[in-house]
Length: 399
Image 1 (spheres, helix red, strand yellow):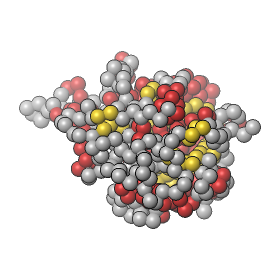
Image 2 (tube, one colour):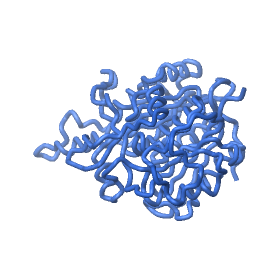
Image 3 (cartoon, helix red, strand yellow):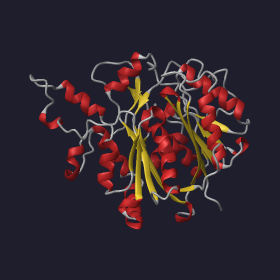
């Protein structure tokens, strides 16, 4: 049985997605109910679907000192670090605590596999990768964390979490444990995933990709729209940033029911939710807003909708924001944690874009349109392939 934790301060946070670069772009899009999906113009072969593509990644470039890390995923990471003065905040934490006392924990599901795909498409007559792509550092799952650690000059614990769609939600739990155990004084957490053929054609082979913009929780939903994103947060002990929002709790579980389908009764998801509330010392009726996992796949939405309907009162508001951004896979956890934090900061419940006829399993909690209302407590759900689940609880700083 989990026990309550000491809350952590979220001193700084940022996100970059199809909605734009930085927090202001995201708030503007969410509050005006304007999505960022567009027809697929990315894949190496035609694929009729919609994607959440980040503008400007092709124009971004890494400094010469970090050229060995060059790839689309790390360019997006570099772009994301420069939003909302996050890079300055991270460097300030390094100065205050020391490079060895700031942990780095990043989630990703594909890392820089796009660069590996490119290399295999250009093998020479001897079957070798082209010289400019013979860079072992980028053909590895740890490419993202390795690059960011070098870019920030961090020397503390450095972890890559790759648990499918829950990857960059679970980084918050890892950070809490490292700080509580005295292994770090602060942690940079986050996640980055970029579009690539492997995910576009892989999910399409599973018949999970919608030919139209995704419609989370709608009766007529046809599947997911894949997106890309970068997001980061800086966590410290609460007394170090008394006016910052709080990470109040987290829950993790693995239901191990099926490789790609959730438990039909949502048992793993419910356990993660229960543990997050327990660690945060919260009751369901205290939760103002829940950012749902809501991918627009048939079974995932049905199971999650039923869970929320039975676990929370009608006064709790809930929505999926994947209709705005697409499913950003390993970056979904951090992106939607940022949405939850912005809901608290601005008093905004984002609407469930794309849903006009809610699934029968949905309860009155589902917010179809964006709403202005005070949010003191917000949850964020992330449920990954293989039943790897995470739930985060955030709260307003105490008065």
